[in-house]
Amino acid sequence: MKKIALFSSLLIGALALAQGIKFEDSNFATILAKAKKENKLVFVDAYASWCGPCKLMVKNIFPLQSVGDYYNSHFINAKIDMEKGEGIALAKKYNVKAFPTYLFINGDGEAVHRTLGYVEEKDFIQFAKDAEDPNKRLTALKQKFENGEKDPEFLKNLAGLTMYNDADFAGKVMNRYFQQKTTLDQEDIQMLLSGTQSTDSPLYTIFHEKKADIIKFLPEDKYEKFDKNIKLNTVAKKAYNADTKTWNDSYFMTEAQKFLSKEEAEKIYKRMKANRALKNKDIPAYEKLILELYKDTSAASSEELNSLAWNFFENVNNKASLEKAIAWAQESVKKDQNYANTDTLANLYNKIGDKKNAKLWAEKSIELAKSTGEDFSDTEKLLKSL
Image (cartoon, rainbow, N blue to C red):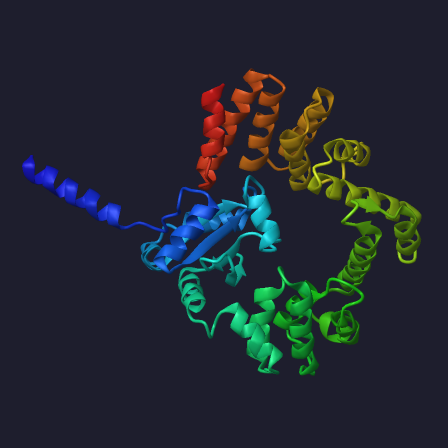
């Protein structure tokens, strides 16, 4: 028995050593101070609770021993929800617009390196090594670009690093890259489509000049749809005043009707206003616009309906509106039953005080999560509270 006990304790000890990334459990100011004292960088996993790739990193990459060994010995690690608490201000300060974003920040609070998205083990460790090398950090790469670097691989890498947090700079990088290309391959086209955000960008000219290359990989109707979206983004950006949080209705409708019907323009405009209202936490305006937009939900996808229902769960308190959200969630489940939309339904029922249905759907949601290997800890907490 003693031998078995000894073996068990050794096994437990070995398992305890096989840790992934250890994240600090304190506020960001304390984390920065610790990094400065230890002369280390802070690694920040800037995530959002709804982000799929964020959850996959937590499941597949962060727990790996090789990742934990490197990150724990070289950095002070922080995991921050960019849509809650102090994360909201940090997202604004560090221009986090896509999830997951990974930041390396020095003790003075300056971001010296960053990337984003789902990253495999080897690349995730290499990315950390690059952050420690002043010659490979984003700040150094930007300076190299300003000095005239034209190497295509360098430009492609730099564009990828800056596309979602410094669109103007990334546009300049891609413009230099595409000026050297006579024909485009599929990877080039994907980068061009991701980077072309406005009709005012030099990339938009390239988008039109390279149409013949693009439609080899993208059906022409999708090319035209993408072109329309670029125009819409440009008009919307000019119609909205971020300082006053107001829209220029006349400008938007006049410009949008140059490439859309009046009915299309009105519907899209209402959706844009709703999205902006939600972002600005103007919930009454958001609630009103969404209820107007989704009187008929027959054409809406399961995912779209679930997203609407969850937004109402998180932000709306009017019972009649919450019951409408339950109808959306029910329709989402009918179209494609999965862990996410059954969890939404359970939470909505709980919010209106229907504990019986909340329990039923929470149990169903956990059952689905187990079958697909998804994290159901939040649903389990809900179930225990019922």
